[in-house]
Amino acid sequence: WLILLLVIMATMSDCYGYRALEDFARRHHQALLENLDLPPMGFPSDSTFRRVMMSIDFTQLAQVLTNWIRDAVPTQEGDWLGVDGKSIKGTVNNYAQAYQDFVSVVSVFSSRCGVALALEQFRNKESSEIDVVQLLLANLGIEGVILSFDALHCQKKL
Image 1 (tube, rainbow, N blue to C red):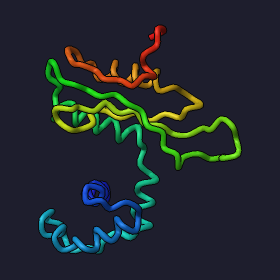
Image 2 (cartoon, one colour; image 1 turned 180 degrees about the vertical axis):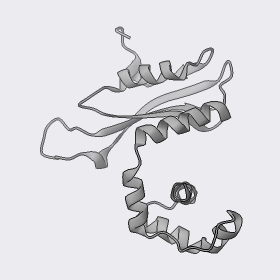
Image 3 (cartoon, helix red, strand yellow; image 1 turned 90 degrees about the horizontal axis):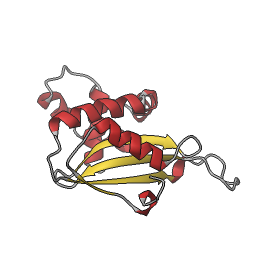
Image 4 (cartoon, rainbow, N blue to C red; image 1 turned 180 degrees about the horizontal axis):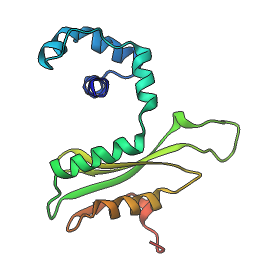
């Protein structure tokens, strides 16, 4: 749990990358030990951050965070929620192919609270943003809110 907490805190402090995470932990080592009431210990290296982050199941983590945020930030009738998908260009494997398989992330964002209520990732060869958005909204079970989508979702078939 400590590594994940450090990743969250460092990311909120604009630290991106494993070396930046290690640097954050090193710079704030004493304050973290004191404020989190931890026993004396060393700080994690960049390779430790990498190993831990690579072992995390994104789907499981996203579900845990979605459940937590649903309790911590309940939607209210009339809330504005923005729904959008973003492709992560660094996940392309073969740049020579005409049709690329990359990872995308769809989020549901609460304008009132300023937080993402839910996230879902998918590979574009396996699914589409439209299907993922419909599943995500069904799983959230929200009613009485105003949803904002981009033009992709303005199709007669939907």
